[in-house]
Amino acid sequence: MTSLGDEGTQFDRLCELNVIEQLTNVCEATCVQDAWARDQPVMVHGWIYAVKDGLLRDLGLCIAAPEELAPAYQAAVARGSPLIDVGQDI
Image (cartoon, rainbow, N blue to C red; front, side, top):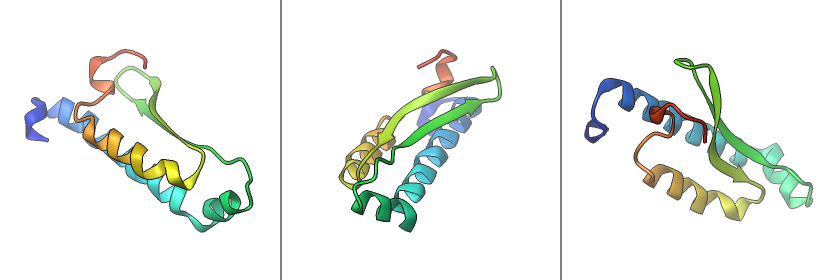
């Protein structure tokens, strides 16, 4: 985290990582897993709200099946720099 530079950028990335972790928790919830097992269409999205500008941003995470979770999680965590730091919509 310290490699991201200033405290504000670190905070933005920490908030994004929290969204990524909570998305994982939702995807691993029994009700979602059961729905996927019954072939019900369930999609879990990762969005974040930036208080500094009032915009809602899509973190590019949209999980529609259990096998999509691990690669999407790894890619989102590996990204490194926050999307909300640049102050523009994604």
